Image 1 (spheres, one colour):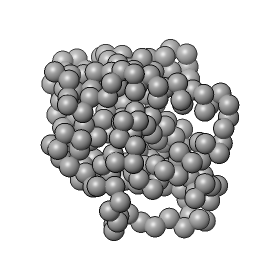
Image 2 (cartoon, helix red, strand yellow):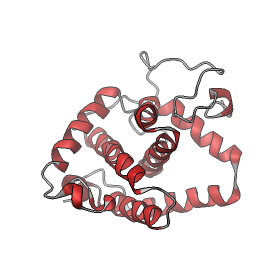
Image 3 (cartoon, one colour):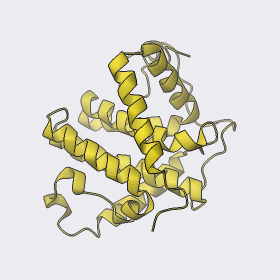
Image 4 (tube, one colour):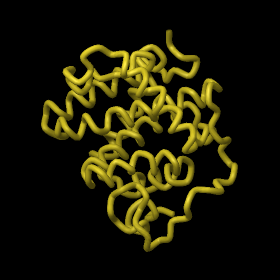
Length: 209
């Protein structure tokens, strides 16, 4: 059964269309504005997605951040400016839920990457999951992303979905937007960007700040 916070199919499709147009136009100003919003509103999400860079390298980290950003944008379309801010605890709890759920899937490691999906998420967020499965399958098939990279980032992407769904349904509430983030480290303009790109903040997510 779909979650009360299920993202509608139209919102999923509009998000993909918007991202595609940004990419085709090469609209750096709009992309920087979007990136600055993500850094301001969802700093823990950004840090969580970027954490894959330390173990798997820049390309994997960038892919994880892109997919996490895409998921955020899907949920944000309906809740712009009011989407709960995920915390480290939200994400840690969601990771536990997804890991447990994936553990119930028989023969998980033998399945193609895009089929390694937590069953409860298929029910809770059917349109988001269906679109992500389609995108992952297409990226791997067209060699836009290595299968190994897809295998690393697909679970964290599902964790972000579970965290937002839980926050919006009140199962595990996030922070109300507008509250002060006390424990998120302040990023200096000459520091490395927390998104994992390896660039200085002022030349990455801080460009529009």
